[in-house]
Structures are given as C-alpha cells and as structure tokens.
Amino acid sequence: MTTPRYVTVGIDIGTLNTKVTLGPTHDHELVRNAHGGHVTPTAVTFAGKSRARLLGEDATEVARADGNTVGMLERLLVDSLDGEIVDGDINKDDLAEFLRFDWRKGEGTVYIPSMDEEFTSTALLAMFLGRIKRNVLSTVERLDGGRNDSDMSTSADLQFVFAVPPSYPESTRNALVDAAYAASISNSTVIDSTSCIATVYERKFGDSVVENDKRNILVVDMGHARTSVAILQLINNAELAGDEMDVDEEKSNEEEKKIIEPIDRDNSTDKSGSISKVKILSSVSCPTLGAGNIDIVLYHHFRATLPSLAKAEFKSNSRSGQKLLEGCRKLKHLLSM
Image (tube, rainbow, N blue to C red; front, side):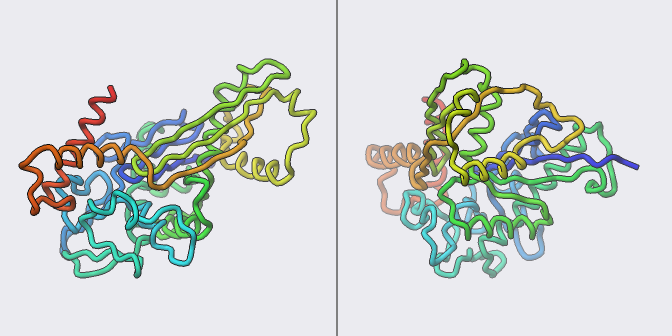
C-alpha cells in the first residue's frame, strides 16, 4: 500500500503568464509546461467547433491572435462581478484599447466568433486551470522518477493554493475556487499574496535579526498590469514576547501557516528553528499600474513620432497594433538588462 504524500501547489495567475511551483516536498520546483517553459500564457484559443481548444502554452501568441483568443483571464474574472467594489475595471484602464476579443462586461461573457458562443469568465478560467493541473501532474511524475500511476490521487494529495492581491473581494475569491472545482481541482485555497511573501521572507532571513532587534522591509511586487506594495516588520521573538499581538491577526496567521507550511509531516524540511517573526504592517494594491504601462507609453511614443504608424487605419487592437506592442515589450526588457 502506497503511503499518501501531501504536495502543495502554489499558483500565481498573472495578466500575461501564470507561474506554478510545488511545495517543500519537491524542493519548490517550478512547474514546466508542455513546451518546457517555466511560465504558462494565461490564454485560451478556440480553433473552431470541430477542433480542440488550445490552452496555455498552446494558445495563439498575443501578437498573432484574433478575436478567438482570450487572454487576461484573471482580470476578466475580477471585472465580471457586478455589484462589487472590484479590483480593477478593464474598460477603464490602458489595456482596454488593445483587446482583440469581444468582452461583454455587462453580461460577464466573451463572445467567440469561431464558436458563435459566449463563455463566462469563470468557464474560461476553468479551461485554463485544467491545463495547469495536467502540467502539475506531469511535473510531479517526472520528479518522482517517471512513475505512472493510474490514479495520481492515490499516491499524492495535491493542495492548490492561489495567491491573490489583498484587495480581492470575497466574491472574486469564491469565483476562483468555483473555476478550480470545475477543472476537477477539489482541494484549493485562496490566500493573500502578501502573506506568502511574509512567510518566505521569514524563512529566508529570519535568523538575520539579532535578539531584541527589529527591521522594517518594503516589498514591491510589480506585475504586468498590477502593482502591490507591502511593509513588513521582521522582529525577534524575544521582542514579540513583550508585545500584545492582535487576536484576529494571530488567528489569521495560524490559518495561513497551516496552508503555507510543509504538509508532508513525516519529511518536513523546515527545521531552521527561526527565532524571528514577520508581521504585515500595511499593504496596498493598484490594479491599473504595472510594467505593461511602460509598453503602452513606448507604443504611443512610436505612434506619435513615426509617420508610417500614425495612419488612421493603424489601430491598437489590430494585428499590426499587437505586433508593435509586443515589440515595445521586448524593447523594455532589452533596456532593463
């Protein structure tokens, strides 16, 4: 009889790409997609009614995509919940002019011409998460020596943990869990990304603080379309002994600790015995500021300075506009090196 193993799977769904990592039982290995990449494009392509959907790394590249390729799945999920103070509105940010697919915000659906159907943002995300799950199972199998169990759940209990900005409303978190369940991911949890950062920082640098000392840390996480900023405090346990921690904060930390800590109880590698604790003093997230804004500034600069790009028929959501935006993205990476 095979002894059950508990594998934590951390998922960060980004605007352009999604990154997935395994927990301590597999040395925090990054999950590779079917093409061998460490990130998976957050996109779905519908090739037609009689053809299979193309998910993640198989989806059409943004620069060559048309209205049958849907990207930014995470932002669609956030933007589709009417009646909530959501984390961002696609129709109000700078990314809106570059959308090639038909996003019907009032209905919370995307119209796909090749299928002549509408799909909800939850359904689209569920399709994508199905590919993510397959990539996870393939990586676990590879790391475990190529074992090919008929039912992986008999030997590995996968716990999927989604990291989201603290400003996510409860309705969006529930919709994310619903999408995971539709993708046959029954064991999933949504936690704040700030809590993840605090836990990792504590484990890596907890021993660097001397007794009765404290250190404040500013953490900036800039994605393609969102930026989160947090202020952490690394404090020695001896100092903590004299402080009264907020009861709600302590309870929240305990709940997140159960999720983030290694849950392979027989083979836990967390034996550092850190004498320090990280507290989250403050955090904020801006849903309309990210590295993609730099691409858009470069895009408009070239449109304004190059006569061949100033033509009226040259539109941002055309294939030519997408190619120019992709070129600006590559230029930004080149200038950042």
